[in-house]
Length: 244
Length: 117
Length: 112
Image 1 (cartoon, one colour):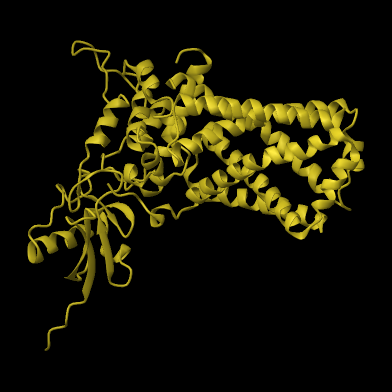
Image 2 (cartoon, rainbow over the protein chains, first blue to last red):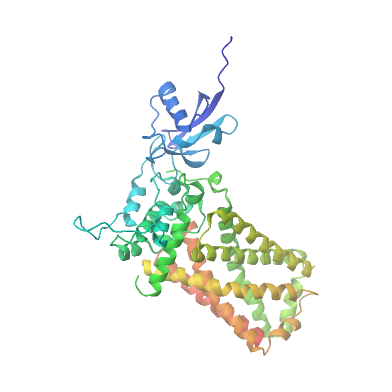
């Protein structure tokens, strides 16, 4: 029996270098069942061009390191099937937007995490190891707000999809504000007033225009838009009380 | 650094944002003209009538319909924003909000146009 | 501008938006009814002249829009033209004041 010719994917991959900072180069990759975009990138690096730089770790949607721009939209490549995104037999793979490119498909995430810290993204404990566990009932409104927003893996997809990040360089971005919202609703946290001041104003939640690209693209189906709206209400209340 | 393009922007909330921004911008630019025209009444009815006759031209009439549409669109989009920001965003309902906003705006413009012509 | 001032500007824009929502509804209804059979100065002024209710309505309308529009334009200029800072803020304050002035002048013209 004759071997069936494998169907070929035509993949445009962003490669660094040259005057424009980079350009797309096209590779032919055999199509397979249940193939992910990350599989495609890996195949190119292993079989066609070992100099291709990209980043990944867990391959199962937990670590948040493999996000790239696939056909113009930011996605986690390890959990994105080629069948879902390929147009005909074409794919375009580029590094995330709104972050400096280190090389090829690798971006420098520093600004993303610096802003995370700037938004007060760290938990500030109010109890010591000698204290008993705090009991947080699962059905309290604050706990539910936290539940809805806590699953962020820090992949940067929302940050890369947000136009406000591109237009307003100081803007903290959806992930950092979403993180701040979870901590503002954490009854164990002891830094609420300072964090609220950090996320107010033009670099913070008030810069958001509800374009909701973050919510549209979040691979964990979170809604940073909801979290940011919550922060808007929280800061507005504080401002009216003169507490901001 | 690369920036996102229109493949990323093509979703209902983004279009709602864009319509809101462009309508707001246009209305803000139109306002001084609107106030100036009404101010002509200080010089008497005749001065205002003279301008109102000028607005009988087809192109001006069409612009009026467009402005009414933009005003209604900005109103509907603004109500949508207030609902999302102050009442709370409902993820599953977002497309309905955009559709309702568009519908309200179209209805107003149509009603205005029907009476105008 | 400080985070507190930005928050207040945001609140002012939302508060004025709530007022404008009502004003614009009335305005749209008035326009749709008024243009029937053509617009004349006599018709417009007959409705508004010496009417304290319309005077108050339009004064509130103008005040709200003079707050709402410059804040929006300021945001657009900062995002699309990268024009921000103290000079820009001062400019938008002047725009707001000017808008209020010509708006009130227009109200006076149709109600007095």
